[in-house]
Amino acid sequence: MKQINRVAIVGGTHGNEFTGAYLIQKFAQFPNLITRSSFETVTLLANPHAFAAGRRYVEKDLNRCFLKQDLQDSTLKTYEELQAKLIQDTLASNGDKQADFILDLHSSTANMGLTMILVNSHPLNLKLAAYLSQVNPFVKIYRCSFKSVAENPFVNSLCELGFAIEVGPIAQGILKATLFQQTQELVHTVLDYLEQFNQGEIPSNKETLILYDHLSVVDYPKNPDGTIFGMIHPELQDKDYQALNPGDPIFITFNDKTIVYEGTSTVWPIFINEAAYYEKGIAMCLTQRQQINI
Amino acid sequence: MKQINRVAIVGGTHGNEFTGAYLIQKFAQFPNLITRSSFETVTLLANPHAFAAGRRYVEKDLNRCFLKQDLQDSTLKTYEELQAKLIQDTLASNGDKQADFILDLHSSTANMGLTMILVNSHPLNLKLAAYLSQVNPFVKIYRCSFKSVAENPFVNSLCELGFAIEVGPIAQGILKATLFQQTQELVHTVLDYLEQFNQGEIPSNKETLILYDHLSVVDYPKNPDGTIFGMIHPELQDKDYQALNPGDPIFITFNDKTIVYEGTSTVWPIFINEAAYYEKGIAMCLTQRQQINI
Image (cartoon, chains in turn purple, cyan):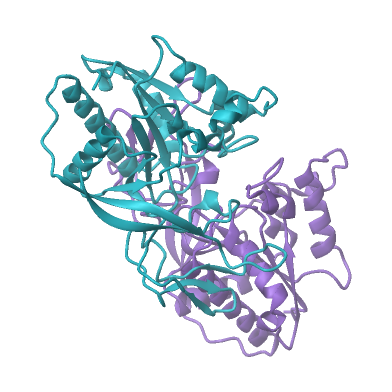
C-alpha cells in the first residue's frame, strides 16, 4: 500500500461539539503535538459559523452534506452545503493538498466512550481499529457501512482511510477535561500508528476485532401528531454497547408505562439518547456485535 | 397570610431544557396530577418557539427579560421580550388571573441535583425550602437575592412566592427519565405543601435550613481576544455544592497547566460547567454555605 502523505484532523463539524473544535484550536496553536516525520498533518475547523453560534449547524447538518451528488449540485447553496464543497476542495481535490487520512472529531450525549466510526472495511482501518481497541479498553468500534461511497453523506466519505471519533457522554456546548485529554491521547496514538505504517513497522495486532455493525435505528414512541410520549427507560440509559434482549425495557412513557424491546434476537444499542438525534427521529441505533478476523 | 388561589407551573422558559417543557405537556394532558382542592393550578410553556427549535432562546434569553423597566419599555420587540410581556399579562396582571405562586422548571448540565433557586427570603418560601430539603436530601437551596424586585430579570420576579427548580446534570435537548420523575415528584410535594398551607396545616419543619447564598461568578481563563484557553479542572467537575478552598484546582489549561482558586476563604461553587453560561462568561457561581434559623 502507498504511503500516507497528508493527514487531516477535522473538528467542529458540529458546532456545539466543543471537544473536537477546541482540540483543533489547541493543535493549531501547538503544531508540534501533531507533527510527525513521514507525513504532513493539517487541521480544519469544519463549521466555524455553527461553532461561533454554539449550535450543531446553521442551516443544515454539515455531516449529512457530503453525498457525491450533492457536492456536484450547484443549486445547493445553504451555508453548510457550500461549506461541504469548500471542504471537499480543501481535502479531496486531486493534487498535493489531497488528504490520505481523515480523522473527524465528534462528541455525543450518549455513553459512547471512545468510539471509532468506520464507514468502510479498508484493511488499514480495521488494523488500526484493532490496535486502538487493544491499547485502550474504552475504545469501541462501530461500523456503519454504505453500499457505495456515493451514498455516504459524512465528512469521511472524502477519503477511504480514516474515521470519525465519537466521544461521550458529554453535553453539547461544554468541554470536559477528562474526555478532552482522552480524545487528544487517541489522536496521538493514531498519528503514531500512521507514522509506523509509513516506516513499514506496523505494531503487531491481535488477529481478531470486536465490531458493532449497524443494523437499524429506533424512534421514540410518538403520537399521531409527531410529538413524543416517552423517553429512554432508566434501565437502558447509559447502557450503550451492552446486550439488549427481547423483552428488555427500552422506553418509559410519560404516564409511567414500560415499553420493551420486541425484536427476536439480542442487539447492542448505541447512541442511546443522543440530543442531536431527537430531530432525526432516532432514540438509539441498534448494532450487531461480532468478532471478525483481520 | 392570605390564601393561595392560583399556582402557575412554568416550563420551557429555555427551549432546550426538555425536562420542564415535557412535564408541562404531561401536566396539561393529565391535569388531575396537579389539581388540588384549595387552589387552581395552571401550566405555561413559556418559550414555544425556542422549544420548537430545540434552542435556549430564539433572539434573547427569556429568563433575563423580566426586569420591570424592560417589561414597561414598548420599544423592546424581540420575540422573547414580547413573550415576557405576554407572560406578565398572563400571570401577573391584577385580577382573577394573577398567580400567587410561580414554579419555573429548569435544567442544567451542571451537577445541580434538585436545586430550588430562591430570589427572595419570603418566610413561606424559606419554610417550603426547609420542608423540601428535609423530605429529599437531593434538594439544595440556592438563594440569589436582588436589592429590589425591579432588578430581578427572572420569570420568578413576577410573584414573590415561588422559585425556579434547576435539575441536573442533564444535557440540553434530552430527557432523562430519572430526573423527569424526580422533578415531577418535587412538583407534587410543593403542591401538597401549598394545599396544606391553605388548610392551615403546614407540615412541621426543622427550624434550621442550609442555604447557599450567591457571592459572585467566575469566568473561564481567556485570551485577550476573548477565546477561552482552559476548562473546568477534572477534580472540580461535578463537585457542585462541595467546599472549594484556597489553593484547590479550578481550571486546567489546554496545555495542561492547573489554575487554582485564589480566594481567601472557603466557597461552595455551583453551576460548574453549565453549557448555557459559556456565552455569559460564567464558568461557575460561587456561594456561601450557611445555616439559618427560620
